[in-house]
Length: 275
Image (cartoon, rainbow, N blue to C red; front, side, top):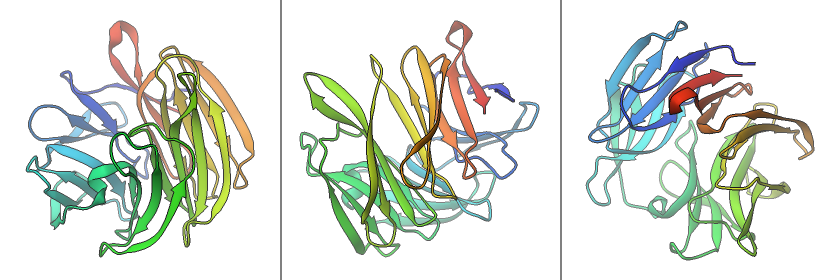
């Protein structure tokens, strides 16, 4: 059940939940006009940190084992991206400019703690052919695999843990119908381990997932009326599923499988709920 609840962001902005801290304190990225903001809360819901980042568009955030954040994004200039290292309060320690790369055409990506990036890319916006690639910290391609299913534009998500890479995305199955695709690969060489599809509900659906330290996969699926939580074991067998009312705005899942959801509550007011 829900154990904590907080109001988030005091003005209408896009809210992104960040990877949960080891003590499970919620942290969010508030995205509006100007710079993105890193906000962290205390156990009672009080704002502990509110730091402006030198980015206007944040593409990905990864929390390292030491609590520092790796943040990839742009300051708004054409084809100019940065990889930032920040402390636990969002203050920049080490900004590294990045060369323009295929990540600008990324449908989904994951930035690993060693600087490697896992990208789901497409040939162009209208293309249904996608590839999942591993690129090391120096920009060198390690492996690449074609995803056979027709992924809808920018719907993919990637997570990596325990030697496994999992990709989820919305796919076109014809007659204006879509399903959720799940593919899990070996981190070392991209070999397929297991795959499945999930029938989604009516209306636009959001999908959030994370590969856990025991190589299982936790997935949160939301429609305009409800949200579901699914768990798959390391072999792709679904071992748990539950449904609850209220749609979600965004979600973050910790490495041990704890999910923090941003729900659209009473009077359309965003609230944080942690399971």
